[in-house]
Image (cartoon, rainbow, N blue to C red; front, side, top):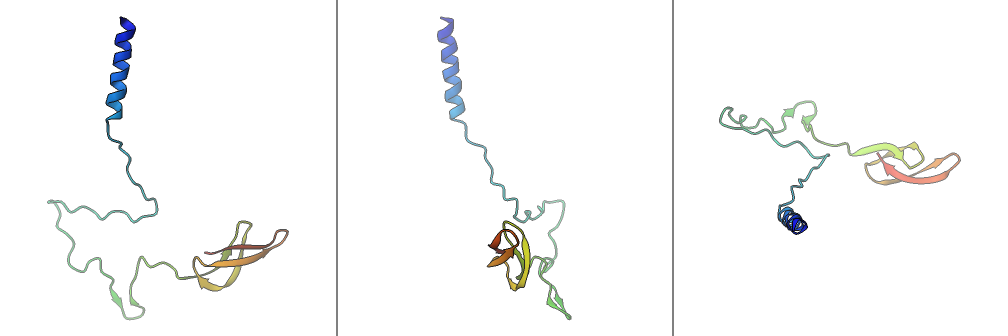
Length: 106
C-alpha cells in the first residue's frame, strides 16, 4: 500500500514538472546593452542627444563605427603583418617551421 502511494506521488510530481514552462533566456555577450529605462521619475533625453554631432575637423562623429581595414594576418600558428585589407578577409602567412598558413585579417 505504501509503495503504491509513493509511486503515485512520484508520477504526479513528474507530470507536474513536465507541464512547467522552460525558463531559458537569450543572452548575446557581444550585443550592445539595452537602452536605459525612462520611468516616471526621470524625463527622456532631449531631442538629438544620441545623434552623431558634426565636427569641423573630421565631419560627423561615429562612436560605434568599427575599423574597416586591418594590417595583421592572424593564423592558427601565429601572426604576420600584411598590406591594409578589409577586416575579415582571408590572408596567408609563411610561418617558420610550419610553412604557409591561411588566416584572417584582424
